[in-house]
Image 1 (spheres, rainbow, N blue to C red):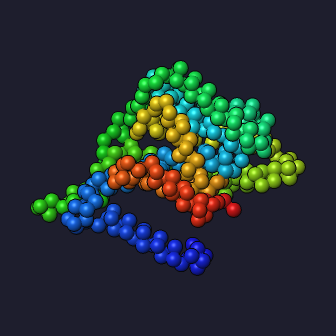
Image 2: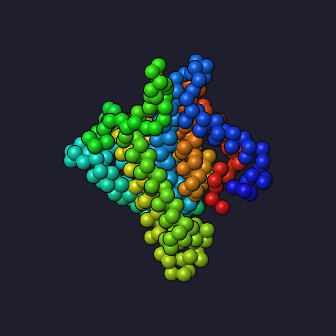
Image 3: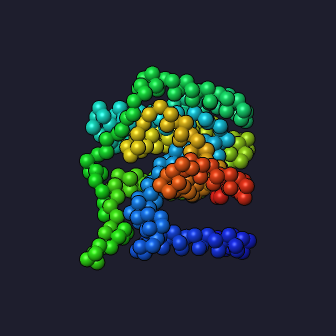
Length: 336
């Protein structure tokens, strides 16, 4: 951080001012003139929290993608299909068993199995051949989409939220002041907050596993120089299969999350594949903190844009990506 401030004092100052303004908008009581200019504070806070929780969902998808694409250099453009497949599995299991948690477990396991098959059958035969991997996985994503459309139809599916997570929770954020002087606090769905906290826990655990454990050291060493690592006796292919399975399983978990507070339908695979690509480009390939930062930025941009500039909301995310590519092509927190 100190090095960044020394090298880019102007950008550091702009960042500090932007953070200070954002904190004031969230925690301060808005004057009437500001509400007349940009709308009610409750709408703004809902958009902010929707963006943060959507960022948590994007992180779950993109973290698996950054493990597979950023670390292992496997171009898996069928990653969105794993998301949708996991969502459908979670819906089927939670509906038939009545257990929301069981839906997560089965979705993770089955998408991980699909990931193992992809790594062994497809990517192991095409190591280092980025163009072939791209074309083959595009074809596979089309096949998977048609198979899921045939099996599940074109309907929208919503995974039922468990009863212990239904309802809002009151947050210590003032949205308005009544004429009597009593503050009005923000009420927000509990399930979204729980899912966001779970995504943070998963992200921290992944970072610790990659940077503070022996298996993380082996993974990073295998990416940098797999031949030398294999010469030490490590079964590098088995390690890569495990990483690919875990990344695919994360996509399956994200599908259950997305099906819980959004919906599942044909086309969601493409949407989340594009979101994963944008998040990885903005945050930096192979970086878990970068995926978290990129997911947060893109989630906030989408939700705030849909509230204040709905016509151009989708453009905002790609403008952010273009700006990052122009200023820092390797991503904001690229892995060194």
